[in-house]
Length: 332
Length: 277
Ligand SMILES: Nc1ncnc2c1ncn2[C@@H]1O[C@H](COP(=O)(O)OP(=O)(O)OP(=O)(O)O)[C@@H](O)[C@H]1O
Ligand SMILES: Nc1ncnc2c1ncn2[C@@H]1O[C@H](COP(=O)(O)OP(=O)(O)OP(=O)(O)O)[C@@H](O)[C@H]1O
Ligand SMILES: [Mg+2]
Ligand SMILES: [Mg+2]
Image (cartoon, chains in turn red, brown):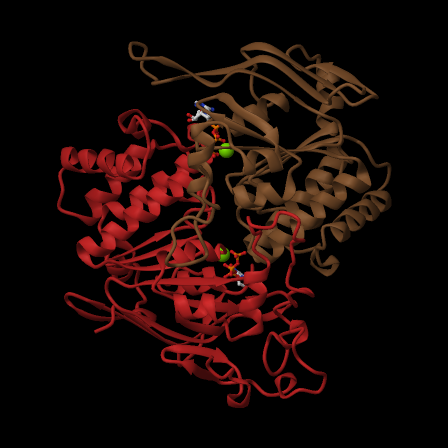
């Protein structure tokens, strides 16, 4: 049984310039103990998707009427879209689902020490007493590789380096032992050695108590090292999804190939860095057909993709891409 | 030979931590650092979290007190002793040395439009004489940073992380600085815009003759962008070499470990670095 099912998620924002579509008919599900990577260019709707899972989007949000998010907890299924009152939201925002936000500074109140925020959170969401909460918090700071955790416990966010702040946030999110962890660019400020350590810790927690993780990152090598499956988003749509090995080794969609080509390689320092050509269109001017067609260098003018939206077609078991069936590459 | 843009000798920055009087400790975040940044160079600074990279950058910007050693700036037009700056010096130096932030969320005021965010340094430093001139400069630099000019009247909350970073790059470059410290400035960007911004920074380096200190934890990015790399560990510089040399032939154990930890794109292989021996 899955941990979370997302069906036909559509998210729009009311703005002065009109209705902006940030997420367009996205579906996926995640099993306990599974790690899903969510990748895609800036503005593709990754954070908005993630925040939808906890209904944390801004007040100008309009969710699609047939959007369904079902969270399967021990006490039974929770219909996230149906949650209205703040008190109901506590179930989701508290212990069961934890989110590591992309905005590290925004996650810590400036006038409270790191430690008192960690303890407060544990007192709300668990049955621990103050002493237990403090001990666990220091233990978690230690486990994410923060030296002198007892000293750091008593410091304010501004006194920590960028990477330490990010780790403290990870420690806080993991301390309630959530069923589902949503990690939005959790390792962007970390150096590689600490990143490896944090990724190991996440893997431990996955195998220790079956935590499911949705891992948002722009670093495909981090996805390769952490995730079981991956979904590639662009302009609010999933263009490719499937087991990590298949998607990274045999990407079926030109967009995924573009993301892989943009990575700086270590085996050839002279290779130019190749961005995906063209600009991301304004969300107010979403292209017809395949949203990626204006930037797709592999398409001929007049192709079907300019006017018709390609379905998610299975290219190999469990591996889907937004292609018309005639364009599915035959397996080698 | 021209003089370096930045030269330090035994530069140190200390913080006191611990709070309560009895267990107060001092922490040498930057510990006797001696190095140079040649004019027009693109120098990478790498090292583990907390090793003092940001603090070194802030010291060179005079944004944190230098507690020991020497530090000089000389761009050929003006010269400053960074350990001893008058308010007038500081005002001039603020224009010439700029920072691109690590955290594009904390850096942008939510109540200002993108146009005002980019214009603010121009107005605060009195670099433009009329609103028209300011607007023209804002549009020019926003265009260089490939921001959509139709979005200049929007507020930052309506932009995603990557878009915000371009805004803060445009803001940093508005005053036409000579020295730019980029602190993890591509960490929040997706790979495509990262490639684009790195190409942009490199072309700005050449076209505008800028000197960059590029702080990053991403070694493959540093390998592709920087001419020279400095490795920091516990507040000290432990290795410093031209980029190619450092990656081909790292001298220090610490540098070797750093290279070995670069994650591989191959799910069945842990490290991306070619086997280093
Ligand atoms: N409150 C809001 N009002 C209007 N538009 C918004 C709002 N929040 C997000 N958007 C828009 O929704 C789209 C998706 O944004 P989102 O933050 O999910 O991107 P992302 O994939 O997380 O990008 P990044 O990698 O840069 O973090 C963007 O075009 C963004 O400008
Ligand atoms: N204002 C401050 N007060 C007290 N300690 C500080 C302050 N700023 C930095 N430090 C400490 O100085 C040390 C170096 O921090 P710095 O931010 O320079 O690290 P960094 O190399 O940039 O790390 P990261 O890669 O995580 O950004 C850390 O131990 C940090 O906690
Ligand atoms: Mg995001
Ligand atoms: Mg830093």
